[in-house]
Image (cartoon, rainbow over all chains, first blue to last red; front, top):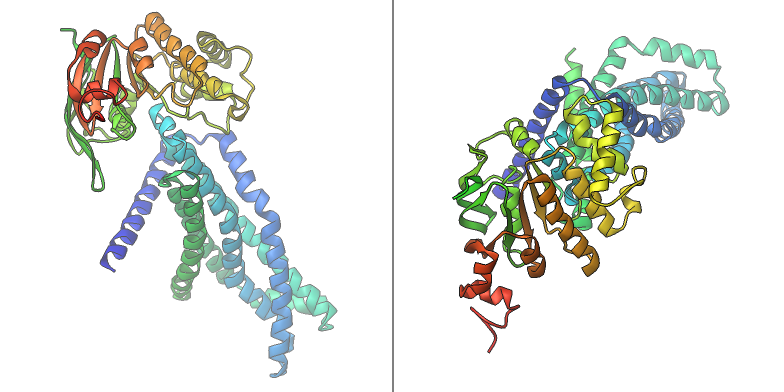
Length: 251
Length: 252
Protein backbone atom coordinates (compact mmCIF):
# COMPACT_ATOMS: atom_id res chain seq x y z
CA UNK A 1 0.00 0.00 0.00
CA UNK A 2 2.83 2.36 0.96
CA UNK A 3 4.56 1.48 -2.31
CA UNK A 4 1.50 2.44 -4.36
CA UNK A 5 1.15 5.69 -2.42
CA UNK A 6 4.82 6.50 -2.97
CA UNK A 7 4.56 5.85 -6.71
CA UNK A 8 1.37 7.94 -6.90
CA UNK A 9 2.95 10.85 -5.03
CA UNK A 10 6.01 10.52 -7.25
CA UNK A 11 3.82 11.06 -10.33
CA UNK A 12 2.07 14.04 -8.71
CA UNK A 13 5.45 15.59 -7.94
CA UNK A 14 6.71 14.96 -11.45
CA UNK A 15 3.58 16.50 -12.99
CA UNK A 16 3.99 19.55 -10.73
CA UNK A 17 7.58 19.96 -11.88
CA UNK A 18 6.46 19.53 -15.52
CA UNK A 19 3.99 22.36 -14.83
CA UNK A 20 6.80 24.53 -13.46
CA UNK A 21 9.00 23.80 -16.45
CA UNK A 22 6.11 24.53 -18.81
CA UNK A 23 5.63 27.97 -17.30
CA UNK A 24 9.38 28.65 -17.42
CA UNK A 25 9.70 27.55 -21.04
CA UNK A 26 6.54 29.44 -22.06
CA UNK A 27 7.94 32.68 -20.66
CA UNK A 28 11.44 32.20 -22.00
CA UNK A 29 10.77 32.66 -25.71
CA UNK A 30 8.02 34.00 -27.91
CA UNK A 31 5.49 31.33 -28.89
CA UNK A 32 5.97 29.57 -32.22
CA UNK A 33 2.78 30.87 -33.82
CA UNK A 34 2.35 28.32 -36.63
CA UNK A 35 2.65 25.43 -34.16
CA UNK A 36 0.35 27.12 -31.66
CA UNK A 37 -2.30 27.89 -34.29
CA UNK A 38 -2.15 24.33 -35.57
CA UNK A 39 -2.67 23.02 -32.02
CA UNK A 40 -5.52 25.49 -31.32
CA UNK A 41 -7.22 24.16 -34.40
CA UNK A 42 -6.47 20.50 -33.80
CA UNK A 43 -7.26 20.40 -30.07
CA UNK A 44 -9.92 23.10 -29.94
CA UNK A 45 -11.79 23.76 -33.16
CA UNK A 46 -11.97 20.07 -34.03
CA UNK A 47 -13.53 19.35 -30.62
CA UNK A 48 -16.46 21.62 -31.52
CA UNK A 49 -18.89 18.86 -32.49
CA UNK A 50 -18.18 16.50 -29.63
CA UNK A 51 -18.67 19.38 -27.16
CA UNK A 52 -21.84 20.81 -28.69
CA UNK A 53 -23.63 17.53 -29.40
CA UNK A 54 -22.98 16.43 -25.82
CA UNK A 55 -24.32 19.74 -24.53
CA UNK A 56 -27.38 19.77 -26.79
CA UNK A 57 -28.62 16.38 -25.64
CA UNK A 58 -27.70 17.05 -22.00
CA UNK A 59 -29.77 20.25 -22.12
CA UNK A 60 -32.73 18.42 -23.66
CA UNK A 61 -32.57 15.57 -21.13
CA UNK A 62 -32.24 18.05 -18.25
CA UNK A 63 -35.39 19.84 -19.39
CA UNK A 64 -37.31 16.58 -19.64
CA UNK A 65 -36.12 15.22 -16.32
CA UNK A 66 -36.62 18.42 -14.35
CA UNK A 67 -40.09 19.02 -15.76
CA UNK A 68 -40.96 15.46 -14.77
CA UNK A 69 -39.59 15.76 -11.24
CA UNK A 70 -40.70 19.35 -10.67
CA UNK A 71 -44.23 18.64 -11.89
CA UNK A 72 -44.92 16.86 -8.59
CA UNK A 73 -44.28 20.19 -6.82
CA UNK A 74 -46.15 22.22 -9.38
CA UNK A 75 -42.93 23.99 -10.25
CA UNK A 76 -42.25 23.09 -13.83
CA UNK A 77 -42.12 26.77 -14.79
CA UNK A 78 -38.63 26.70 -13.31
CA UNK A 79 -37.24 24.40 -15.99
CA UNK A 80 -35.21 27.32 -17.42
CA UNK A 81 -33.67 28.05 -14.02
CA UNK A 82 -32.71 24.45 -13.36
CA UNK A 83 -31.36 23.78 -16.84
CA UNK A 84 -29.25 26.93 -16.98
CA UNK A 85 -27.89 26.71 -13.42
CA UNK A 86 -26.98 23.02 -13.69
CA UNK A 87 -25.38 23.53 -17.08
CA UNK A 88 -23.39 26.66 -16.37
CA UNK A 89 -22.26 25.77 -12.87
CA UNK A 90 -21.70 22.07 -13.30
CA UNK A 91 -22.56 20.00 -16.34
CA UNK A 92 -21.15 22.29 -19.02
CA UNK A 93 -17.64 22.38 -17.57
CA UNK A 94 -17.57 18.78 -16.35
CA UNK A 95 -19.13 17.01 -19.34
CA UNK A 96 -17.18 19.10 -21.85
CA UNK A 97 -13.96 18.42 -19.97
CA UNK A 98 -14.70 14.70 -19.82
CA UNK A 99 -15.54 14.44 -23.53
CA UNK A 100 -12.91 16.82 -24.87
CA UNK A 101 -10.42 15.54 -22.30
CA UNK A 102 -10.92 11.99 -23.53
CA UNK A 103 -10.49 13.06 -27.12
CA UNK A 104 -7.48 15.37 -26.85
CA UNK A 105 -5.90 13.66 -23.84
CA UNK A 106 -5.74 10.30 -25.59
CA UNK A 107 -4.47 11.96 -28.76
CA UNK A 108 -1.70 13.87 -26.97
CA UNK A 109 -0.49 10.84 -25.00
CA UNK A 110 -0.49 8.65 -28.12
CA UNK A 111 1.46 11.28 -30.07
CA UNK A 112 4.06 12.07 -27.41
CA UNK A 113 4.28 8.40 -26.35
CA UNK A 114 5.03 7.30 -29.91
CA UNK A 115 7.64 10.05 -30.17
CA UNK A 116 9.15 8.86 -26.90
CA UNK A 117 9.45 5.19 -27.81
CA UNK A 118 10.84 5.96 -31.28
CA UNK A 119 13.50 8.24 -29.68
CA UNK A 120 12.09 11.39 -31.33
CA UNK A 121 11.91 13.09 -27.92
CA UNK A 122 15.56 12.20 -27.34
CA UNK A 123 16.35 13.51 -30.82
CA UNK A 124 14.85 16.90 -29.87
CA UNK A 125 17.00 16.94 -26.71
CA UNK A 126 20.05 15.79 -28.69
CA UNK A 127 19.57 18.75 -31.03
CA UNK A 128 19.80 21.06 -28.03
CA UNK A 129 16.10 21.92 -27.99
CA UNK A 130 13.62 21.49 -25.16
CA UNK A 131 10.81 18.94 -25.72
CA UNK A 132 8.76 20.83 -23.13
CA UNK A 133 8.99 24.07 -25.10
CA UNK A 134 8.55 22.42 -28.50
CA UNK A 135 5.72 20.03 -27.59
CA UNK A 136 4.19 20.58 -24.16
CA UNK A 137 3.87 24.39 -24.13
CA UNK A 138 1.76 24.68 -27.32
CA UNK A 139 -0.57 21.89 -26.18
CA UNK A 140 -1.08 23.24 -22.67
CA UNK A 141 -1.64 26.78 -23.98
CA UNK A 142 -4.08 25.60 -26.65
CA UNK A 143 -6.18 23.63 -24.21
CA UNK A 144 -6.13 26.50 -21.68
CA UNK A 145 -7.49 28.82 -24.37
CA UNK A 146 -9.89 26.47 -26.16
CA UNK A 147 -11.52 24.51 -23.34
CA UNK A 148 -13.17 27.58 -21.74
CA UNK A 149 -14.39 28.68 -25.19
CA UNK A 150 -15.84 25.23 -25.79
CA UNK A 151 -17.50 25.31 -22.37
CA UNK A 152 -19.15 28.66 -23.12
CA UNK A 153 -20.41 27.25 -26.41
CA UNK A 154 -21.60 24.10 -24.66
CA UNK A 155 -23.46 26.17 -22.07
CA UNK A 156 -25.25 28.11 -24.81
CA UNK A 157 -26.09 25.02 -26.86
CA UNK A 158 -27.27 23.17 -23.74
CA UNK A 159 -29.60 26.04 -22.82
CA UNK A 160 -30.85 25.96 -26.40
CA UNK A 161 -31.51 22.20 -26.03
CA UNK A 162 -33.55 22.94 -22.92
CA UNK A 163 -35.44 25.62 -24.83
CA UNK A 164 -36.33 23.18 -27.62
CA UNK A 165 -37.80 20.75 -25.12
CA UNK A 166 -39.55 23.48 -23.11
CA UNK A 167 -41.25 24.79 -26.23
CA UNK A 168 -42.03 21.48 -27.97
CA UNK A 169 -43.04 19.16 -25.14
CA UNK A 170 -43.81 21.44 -22.18
CA UNK A 171 -45.64 24.04 -24.26
CA UNK A 172 -43.72 26.88 -22.64
CA UNK A 173 -43.26 30.17 -24.40
CA UNK A 174 -39.64 30.64 -25.52
CA UNK A 175 -39.54 34.17 -24.10
CA UNK A 176 -40.76 32.84 -20.74
CA UNK A 177 -38.06 30.15 -20.70
CA UNK A 178 -35.32 32.64 -21.63
CA UNK A 179 -36.49 35.09 -19.02
CA UNK A 180 -36.08 32.40 -16.34
CA UNK A 181 -32.65 31.55 -17.72
CA UNK A 182 -31.47 35.15 -17.60
CA UNK A 183 -32.81 35.93 -14.15
CA UNK A 184 -31.52 32.67 -12.67
CA UNK A 185 -27.95 33.11 -13.85
CA UNK A 186 -25.57 35.47 -12.11
CA UNK A 187 -22.06 36.47 -13.15
CA UNK A 188 -20.81 34.43 -10.19
CA UNK A 189 -22.32 31.24 -11.68
CA UNK A 190 -20.58 31.84 -14.97
CA UNK A 191 -17.25 32.64 -13.32
CA UNK A 192 -17.33 29.58 -11.07
CA UNK A 193 -18.03 27.39 -14.10
CA UNK A 194 -15.20 28.95 -16.07
CA UNK A 195 -12.84 28.92 -13.08
CA UNK A 196 -13.25 25.17 -12.84
CA UNK A 197 -12.67 24.81 -16.54
CA UNK A 198 -9.19 26.40 -16.33
CA UNK A 199 -8.24 23.86 -13.66
CA UNK A 200 -9.62 20.99 -15.75
CA UNK A 201 -7.70 22.25 -18.78
CA UNK A 202 -4.44 22.19 -16.81
CA UNK A 203 -5.14 18.73 -15.43
CA UNK A 204 -6.01 17.26 -18.84
CA UNK A 205 -3.09 18.80 -20.73
CA UNK A 206 -0.41 18.14 -18.12
CA UNK A 207 -1.47 14.56 -17.32
CA UNK A 208 -1.72 13.72 -21.03
CA UNK A 209 1.70 15.22 -21.85
CA UNK A 210 3.31 13.64 -18.79
CA UNK A 211 1.99 10.15 -19.60
CA UNK A 212 3.27 10.48 -23.16
CA UNK A 213 6.71 11.69 -22.09
CA UNK A 214 7.24 8.77 -19.70
CA UNK A 215 5.87 6.03 -22.00
CA UNK A 216 8.19 3.07 -22.45
CA UNK A 217 8.15 -0.23 -24.30
CA UNK A 218 6.82 0.21 -27.83
CA UNK A 219 3.22 0.06 -29.07
CA UNK A 220 2.09 -1.80 -25.98
CA UNK A 221 3.51 0.90 -23.70
CA UNK A 222 1.92 3.68 -25.72
CA UNK A 223 -1.44 1.88 -25.55
CA UNK A 224 -1.19 1.55 -21.78
CA UNK A 225 -0.16 5.18 -21.38
CA UNK A 226 -3.12 6.32 -23.50
CA UNK A 227 -5.61 4.26 -21.48
CA UNK A 228 -4.03 5.59 -18.30
CA UNK A 229 -4.52 9.16 -19.49
CA UNK A 230 -8.23 8.71 -20.17
CA UNK A 231 -8.80 7.04 -16.80
CA UNK A 232 -6.68 9.46 -14.78
CA UNK A 233 -7.93 12.66 -16.42
CA UNK A 234 -11.59 11.60 -16.07
CA UNK A 235 -11.18 10.69 -12.42
CA UNK A 236 -9.16 13.83 -11.69
CA UNK A 237 -11.79 16.02 -13.37
CA UNK A 238 -14.60 14.46 -11.34
CA UNK A 239 -12.73 14.45 -8.03
CA UNK A 240 -11.28 17.95 -8.38
CA UNK A 241 -14.75 19.16 -9.41
CA UNK A 242 -16.01 18.41 -5.90
CA UNK A 243 -13.25 20.42 -4.24
CA UNK A 244 -13.48 23.24 -6.77
CA UNK A 245 -17.25 23.45 -6.24
CA UNK A 246 -16.66 23.72 -2.49
CA UNK A 247 -13.99 26.34 -3.10
CA UNK A 248 -16.17 28.51 -5.36
CA UNK A 249 -19.11 28.30 -2.93
CA UNK A 250 -17.05 30.34 -0.44
CA UNK A 251 -17.27 33.39 -2.70
CA UNK B 1 49.02 10.42 -26.71
CA UNK B 2 46.44 12.60 -28.49
CA UNK B 3 44.25 14.59 -26.15
CA UNK B 4 40.94 12.93 -25.34
CA UNK B 5 37.76 14.57 -26.65
CA UNK B 6 35.60 12.37 -24.45
CA UNK B 7 36.69 10.65 -21.26
CA UNK B 8 34.72 8.21 -19.12
CA UNK B 9 35.93 7.88 -15.54
CA UNK B 10 34.57 5.00 -13.48
CA UNK B 11 31.02 5.45 -14.81
CA UNK B 12 28.31 3.42 -13.10
CA UNK B 13 24.67 3.33 -14.19
CA UNK B 14 21.76 1.20 -13.01
CA UNK B 15 18.12 1.09 -14.06
CA UNK B 16 16.16 -0.10 -11.04
CA UNK B 17 17.95 -3.23 -9.83
CA UNK B 18 19.73 -3.81 -13.13
CA UNK B 19 23.37 -2.72 -13.14
CA UNK B 20 24.02 -1.66 -16.75
CA UNK B 21 27.41 0.04 -16.53
CA UNK B 22 29.81 -1.06 -13.81
CA UNK B 23 32.83 1.19 -13.73
CA UNK B 24 33.62 2.23 -17.30
CA UNK B 25 36.90 4.07 -17.84
CA UNK B 26 38.20 4.90 -21.30
CA UNK B 27 39.13 7.76 -23.63
CA UNK B 28 37.98 8.73 -27.08
CA UNK B 29 40.61 10.82 -28.83
CA UNK B 30 39.96 13.91 -30.87
CA UNK B 31 39.43 13.06 -34.53
CA UNK B 32 39.39 9.29 -34.21
CA UNK B 33 36.61 6.81 -34.91
CA UNK B 34 36.05 4.72 -31.82
CA UNK B 35 33.84 1.66 -32.16
CA UNK B 36 32.12 0.34 -29.07
CA UNK B 37 31.43 -3.33 -29.69
CA UNK B 38 29.15 -5.44 -27.57
CA UNK B 39 26.32 -7.94 -27.66
CA UNK B 40 22.67 -6.99 -27.36
CA UNK B 41 21.90 -5.63 -23.92
CA UNK B 42 25.55 -5.07 -23.04
CA UNK B 43 24.84 -1.40 -22.27
CA UNK B 44 26.58 0.14 -25.26
CA UNK B 45 23.67 2.41 -26.28
CA UNK B 46 23.31 3.52 -22.66
CA UNK B 47 27.04 4.28 -22.68
CA UNK B 48 27.02 6.69 -25.62
CA UNK B 49 23.82 8.36 -24.45
CA UNK B 50 25.87 9.56 -21.45
CA UNK B 51 28.07 11.62 -23.78
CA UNK B 52 25.31 14.15 -24.49
CA UNK B 53 23.63 13.84 -21.12
CA UNK B 54 20.59 11.82 -22.27
CA UNK B 55 21.49 9.62 -19.29
CA UNK B 56 23.28 10.68 -16.13
CA UNK B 57 25.70 8.33 -14.38
CA UNK B 58 24.92 7.21 -10.84
CA UNK B 59 28.63 7.52 -10.09
CA UNK B 60 31.72 8.61 -12.01
CA UNK B 61 32.50 11.36 -14.51
CA UNK B 62 31.91 12.02 -18.18
CA UNK B 63 34.31 14.64 -19.49
CA UNK B 64 33.52 16.13 -22.89
CA UNK B 65 35.97 18.55 -24.47
CA UNK B 66 37.48 19.29 -21.08
CA UNK B 67 34.19 19.79 -19.20
CA UNK B 68 32.72 17.40 -16.67
CA UNK B 69 29.08 17.33 -17.76
CA UNK B 70 27.74 15.03 -15.05
CA UNK B 71 26.12 17.77 -12.97
CA UNK B 72 25.03 19.93 -15.91
CA UNK B 73 21.33 20.79 -16.12
CA UNK B 74 19.49 20.67 -19.46
CA UNK B 75 20.35 24.32 -20.22
CA UNK B 76 24.09 23.83 -19.81
CA UNK B 77 23.94 20.58 -21.77
CA UNK B 78 22.68 22.54 -24.79
CA UNK B 79 26.21 23.82 -25.43
CA UNK B 80 27.54 20.25 -25.37
CA UNK B 81 24.75 19.00 -27.61
CA UNK B 82 25.46 21.66 -30.22
CA UNK B 83 28.98 20.24 -30.55
CA UNK B 84 27.94 16.59 -30.67
CA UNK B 85 25.29 15.10 -32.94
CA UNK B 86 23.68 11.71 -32.54
CA UNK B 87 22.34 9.31 -35.13
CA UNK B 88 19.67 7.27 -33.39
CA UNK B 89 19.09 3.58 -33.99
CA UNK B 90 15.77 3.95 -35.76
CA UNK B 91 16.73 7.31 -37.26
CA UNK B 92 14.27 9.10 -34.97
CA UNK B 93 13.11 11.37 -37.80
CA UNK B 94 10.16 13.53 -36.79
CA UNK B 95 7.34 11.81 -38.59
CA UNK B 96 5.04 14.82 -38.51
CA UNK B 97 7.58 16.79 -40.59
CA UNK B 98 8.94 16.37 -44.10
CA UNK B 99 12.61 15.80 -44.91
CA UNK B 100 13.34 19.52 -45.31
CA UNK B 101 11.78 20.40 -41.94
CA UNK B 102 13.63 17.53 -40.28
CA UNK B 103 16.99 18.71 -41.59
CA UNK B 104 16.24 22.38 -40.91
CA UNK B 105 15.14 21.71 -37.32
CA UNK B 106 18.46 22.52 -35.66
CA UNK B 107 19.20 25.44 -37.99
CA UNK B 108 15.82 27.05 -37.37
CA UNK B 109 16.15 26.45 -33.65
CA UNK B 110 19.64 27.82 -33.18
CA UNK B 111 20.32 30.26 -36.01
CA UNK B 112 18.59 33.20 -37.68
CA UNK B 113 19.69 32.15 -41.15
CA UNK B 114 17.37 33.22 -43.97
CA UNK B 115 15.14 30.52 -45.45
CA UNK B 116 17.17 30.50 -48.70
CA UNK B 117 20.40 29.68 -46.88
CA UNK B 118 18.70 26.97 -44.83
CA UNK B 119 17.34 25.33 -47.98
CA UNK B 120 20.78 25.45 -49.58
CA UNK B 121 22.37 23.96 -46.46
CA UNK B 122 19.78 21.17 -46.43
CA UNK B 123 20.44 20.45 -50.11
CA UNK B 124 24.21 20.25 -49.47
CA UNK B 125 23.84 17.88 -46.55
CA UNK B 126 21.47 15.63 -48.49
CA UNK B 127 23.99 15.57 -51.33
CA UNK B 128 26.68 14.49 -48.85
CA UNK B 129 24.67 11.36 -48.07
CA UNK B 130 23.89 10.80 -51.74
CA UNK B 131 20.28 11.97 -51.82
CA UNK B 132 18.60 14.74 -53.79
CA UNK B 133 15.15 16.15 -54.51
CA UNK B 134 13.48 14.41 -51.57
CA UNK B 135 12.91 17.48 -49.38
CA UNK B 136 9.14 17.32 -49.70
CA UNK B 137 8.80 13.63 -48.78
CA UNK B 138 7.54 12.53 -45.36
CA UNK B 139 9.61 9.99 -43.38
CA UNK B 140 6.87 7.36 -43.84
CA UNK B 141 7.51 7.51 -47.59
CA UNK B 142 11.21 6.62 -47.23
CA UNK B 143 12.81 3.16 -47.19
CA UNK B 144 14.77 2.02 -44.13
CA UNK B 145 18.12 2.83 -45.72
CA UNK B 146 16.97 6.25 -46.91
CA UNK B 147 15.66 7.06 -43.42
CA UNK B 148 19.09 6.28 -41.97
CA UNK B 149 20.74 8.50 -44.57
CA UNK B 150 18.33 11.37 -44.00
CA UNK B 151 18.88 10.98 -40.26
CA UNK B 152 22.63 11.10 -40.86
CA UNK B 153 22.20 14.24 -42.96
CA UNK B 154 20.13 15.76 -40.13
CA UNK B 155 22.82 14.98 -37.57
CA UNK B 156 25.52 16.76 -39.62
CA UNK B 157 23.29 19.74 -40.47
CA UNK B 158 24.73 21.82 -37.62
CA UNK B 159 28.36 20.93 -38.51
CA UNK B 160 29.10 19.06 -35.27
CA UNK B 161 32.60 18.29 -33.98
CA UNK B 162 31.59 14.79 -33.04
CA UNK B 163 28.99 12.29 -34.27
CA UNK B 164 27.59 9.43 -32.20
CA UNK B 165 26.19 6.51 -34.18
CA UNK B 166 23.81 4.16 -32.34
CA UNK B 167 23.72 0.84 -34.24
CA UNK B 168 23.95 2.51 -37.66
CA UNK B 169 23.66 -0.70 -39.70
CA UNK B 170 21.19 -2.68 -37.60
CA UNK B 171 18.13 -3.81 -39.52
CA UNK B 172 19.53 -2.92 -42.94
CA UNK B 173 20.28 -5.29 -45.81
CA UNK B 174 24.00 -5.98 -46.44
CA UNK B 175 24.23 -3.60 -49.42
CA UNK B 176 22.57 -0.69 -47.64
CA UNK B 177 24.56 -1.44 -44.49
CA UNK B 178 27.71 -1.17 -46.58
CA UNK B 179 26.61 2.17 -48.01
CA UNK B 180 26.09 3.47 -44.49
CA UNK B 181 29.53 2.19 -43.43
CA UNK B 182 31.11 3.97 -46.36
CA UNK B 183 29.20 7.13 -45.50
CA UNK B 184 30.54 7.00 -41.94
CA UNK B 185 34.07 6.73 -43.33
CA UNK B 186 33.58 9.53 -45.82
CA UNK B 187 32.06 11.80 -43.13
CA UNK B 188 35.15 11.10 -41.12
CA UNK B 189 37.48 11.94 -44.00
CA UNK B 190 35.60 15.03 -45.20
CA UNK B 191 34.49 16.60 -41.95
CA UNK B 192 37.36 15.46 -39.67
CA UNK B 193 34.96 14.83 -36.83
CA UNK B 194 35.40 12.59 -33.82
CA UNK B 195 33.10 9.60 -34.21
CA UNK B 196 31.78 7.05 -31.78
CA UNK B 197 30.05 4.05 -33.35
CA UNK B 198 28.12 1.59 -31.23
CA UNK B 199 27.48 -1.72 -32.95
CA UNK B 200 27.40 -5.50 -32.66
CA UNK B 201 28.28 -5.82 -36.34
CA UNK B 202 31.94 -6.94 -36.33
CA UNK B 203 32.51 -6.41 -40.04
CA UNK B 204 31.19 -2.87 -39.84
CA UNK B 205 33.26 -2.21 -36.71
CA UNK B 206 36.52 -3.25 -38.38
CA UNK B 207 35.67 -1.30 -41.53
CA UNK B 208 34.85 2.07 -39.95
CA UNK B 209 36.89 2.04 -36.74
CA UNK B 210 40.35 3.32 -35.83
CA UNK B 211 40.07 1.78 -32.38
CA UNK B 212 37.72 -0.68 -30.75
CA UNK B 213 36.35 -0.90 -27.22
CA UNK B 214 34.63 -4.13 -26.20
CA UNK B 215 31.84 -3.89 -23.65
CA UNK B 216 30.58 -7.01 -21.90
CA UNK B 217 28.14 -7.08 -18.98
CA UNK B 218 28.73 -3.42 -18.17
CA UNK B 219 32.55 -3.62 -18.13
CA UNK B 220 35.20 -2.70 -20.69
CA UNK B 221 37.11 -5.86 -21.54
CA UNK B 222 39.31 -4.41 -24.23
CA UNK B 223 40.33 -1.04 -25.69
CA UNK B 224 42.81 -0.91 -28.56
CA UNK B 225 43.40 -0.64 -32.28
CA UNK B 226 41.74 -2.92 -34.83
CA UNK B 227 44.99 -4.92 -35.24
CA UNK B 228 45.33 -5.31 -31.50
CA UNK B 229 41.71 -6.46 -31.30
CA UNK B 230 42.29 -9.07 -33.98
CA UNK B 231 45.39 -10.37 -32.19
CA UNK B 232 43.97 -10.10 -28.66
CA UNK B 233 43.71 -13.21 -26.50
CA UNK B 234 41.20 -11.56 -24.15
CA UNK B 235 38.76 -14.44 -23.68
CA UNK B 236 35.48 -12.47 -23.82
CA UNK B 237 36.58 -10.54 -26.91
CA UNK B 238 37.75 -13.74 -28.65
CA UNK B 239 34.42 -15.32 -27.85
CA UNK B 240 32.53 -12.41 -29.37
CA UNK B 241 34.72 -12.00 -32.46
CA UNK B 242 34.61 -15.71 -33.24
CA UNK B 243 30.83 -15.79 -32.93
CA UNK B 244 31.03 -18.05 -29.86
CA UNK B 245 33.43 -20.63 -31.33
CA UNK B 246 36.52 -19.63 -29.33
CA UNK B 247 37.36 -17.96 -26.05
CA UNK B 248 35.56 -17.66 -22.72
CA UNK B 249 32.49 -19.89 -22.69
CA UNK B 250 33.04 -21.54 -26.08
CA UNK B 251 30.79 -24.51 -26.55
CA UNK B 252 32.84 -27.71 -26.43
